[in-house]
Image (cartoon, rainbow, N blue to C red; front, side, top):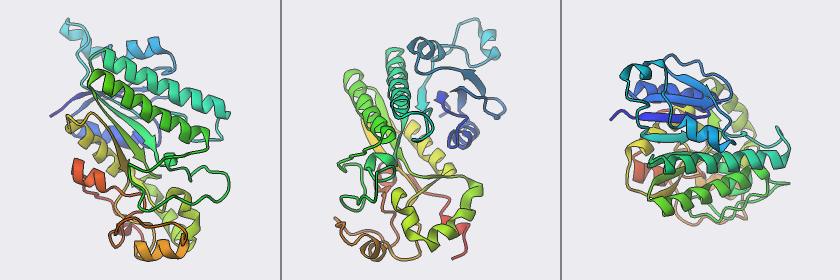
Length: 297
């Protein structure tokens, strides 16, 4: 069923693929960003999400001039997808990265729930697992990385994402809204598969990403499935593709490259160490863009 969606950060690396994908599914979308998105039929409303007043206004406005024709005021919003953020460390000072990411997420979720929008999907991150932006060579506690992992980032970006998950949980408990947090893996755009031969040649270069990734188009499918799945309250889902970025079976590979990290359950032959099992089982995710379709092995 088509929905009216406010999407924040649609002009970013992931959003510029997810928004057109959702539009092609029949959804009507308003993009909130600081930069325009080149997607016909999707208006960008320049919005500072760290300003609560701007967020409340943006979530209760017309999506475009066509809304004026109804004479009934802005139509209701069905869902909010919140991807906007400072995308990593070392772009802004650490305190600014934390401030922008934590405050904007609070503002978006607060405005959505107080305006009666009961479906919110937020972008969390693989960085919550504590290795991506760690100081030095840090081992994971265990494999696979699943949603009940004791997340322990030491950086400002990963910490902001943990706080955002707690914010989402609090508002879901308070309001009864469905708020799903996606721990998004390393986003790969369609033109970036030429990077994979180097990944395969240097296995340890992918440790910080847990030898996992998400194709931007498959991420769009996961977002769509979240929009379609109601009644789960607060949930966290790993948003990654199915398989490890290695040519060796997963357990053999991990025992070779991470010999001190326990494997806590049997893993699929090439299952990604950052496992999407929950997304497959709960949401019905079926990947369409396995890296092996695009990379000679």
